[in-house]
Length: 290
Image 1 (spheres, one colour):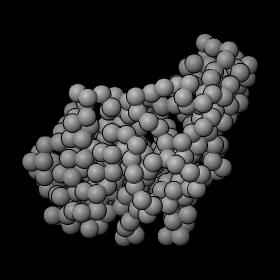
Image 2: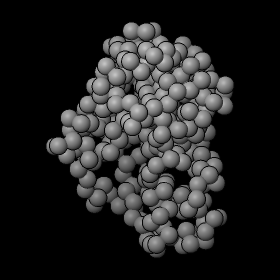
Image 3: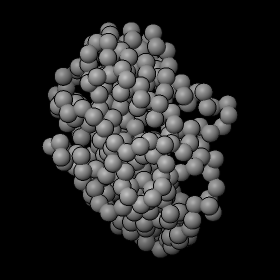
Image 4: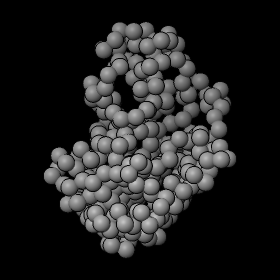
């Protein structure tokens, strides 16, 4: 199977490329320095030339707070909305599969019920709105499509919450972390295996994919990070983690308080759910230097 991957140098894209190779598929990866997805003509030329059986679209503007700055809004839309539309149009034109990575931010984050894949979308911020617009483009132009929403992503490449907390824990005795935003993390290594499983089928539609396990706050997650990290450095065992509310950490972009994702559709369609997030964290800590 020939698969074209956008954002191939990012946290997720790099793991997708490795998983494709491990499975014996032919993976072609590009990133922003090789393909500007906002250029419709360049996108069509690249995908038509590659002639893939499937496209896994990982590329996105993900700097949530920067997206709110007035001078960036149209840049974010160009990547997340127009760029995705460019890809969706070509996939529809040549009849190849398209798997689009989306986000819990397409929902308004209200209530406590886990979000189901077909729930009403009502984004809170620019990032969420442009990813929602990307979803609409995929559904409009690409008949053979999967929309996979993820949350709280961490992987070996790039920056993420775990790396930030570990760096802070090296130099501080006390960490304050919000405890009123609830969800579950997503390990890119585990997710990449699921995405390749998906494109090997024709089970199209919307899915939610985060690691299994109980729903937690960022505060809960940080406590578990420190608890597991102390096996590598006793210093982490002495770090005190204190809960605070989101209003004590004002940010430019509104964050959803409820990022609980209902993942049951995965098993219902025969896909293996991702392992529990505690297990994912343990494996991740063995993979990184800190």
